[in-house]
Image (cartoon, rainbow, N blue to C red; front, side, top):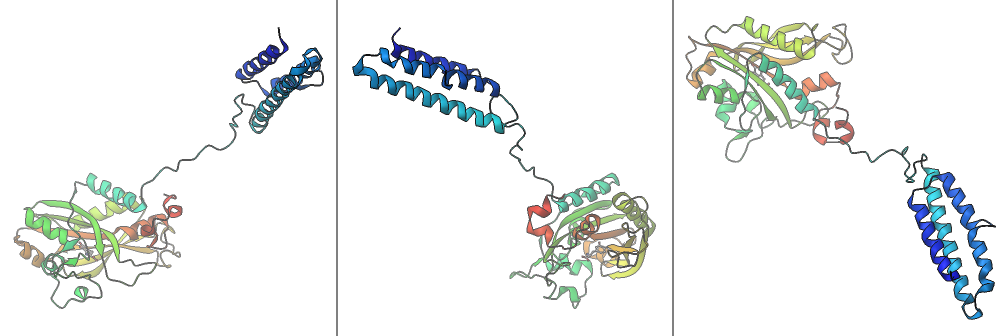
Length: 337
Ligand code: DAH
């Protein structure tokens, strides 16, 4: 066989040897075999003396090229194997993989879902209304007198056509009652707007969940029982409720509801400001004037209503101390839920 042909043959033989993905120890042997002092390529090189003078240069180059290629291939594979965990393909299986961050549910959405699911089990339907409302539905029909301070520019965003960005979800009560006759039992989640100075506790928009139950013989006792059940489900079995007298134009009597602080069990801590109680919602019996504005007979029907701020509830539950975090969409915040 000509020596030229021999070079070709060694090259393809080497390629074949690599094709079987040799392990590190095999690579050492291959290196010895091809490139060692007594290796096959040195041996071949010595045979240059048998080549006719005119082709000696050509032959020398050919063998040198093969030597170089063998050296490079083996070195590359060896580096791959040494950094790897011994995997034969030179892949380091111990390196961390490419991490795909999974999306997760926004804490507000999670809170809303939890609230909805509890009221769903209590037989409440879910209704929604638009964020742009007439002043009539947002205020008048809810028994706000014409000079009520909540109508002020300081609190309410007015649109040029005289509508408002709803300041609460209570106008959805009006929509429901205008559309349907009792019994009505619904919660009404949604976004509301207030023209307030923004700080850790206030934002220009937030979310509320409204509740309304109207039928014959609905009592304040049922209101208390329903809210107690909700709070136990949501905040924990051992929370206590406290109903304080309050005022809302659309309910009479009206209450503010506190739950015993579920962080300190009512002993007093930073979150409940040492009072042992957390204020979580407003409620009351639907004012007869509200029934009049939707054409219900207030002699026949009674009802209760309640309204809670979703951000506030989420902040208490998850220990979030700044309402703005809900709206900034900083993944470092969102990833924690
Ligand atoms: N609409 C009230 C607010 O935005 C919350 C509220 C209080 C709603 C008492 C009610 C209720 O339905 O009965 O502050």
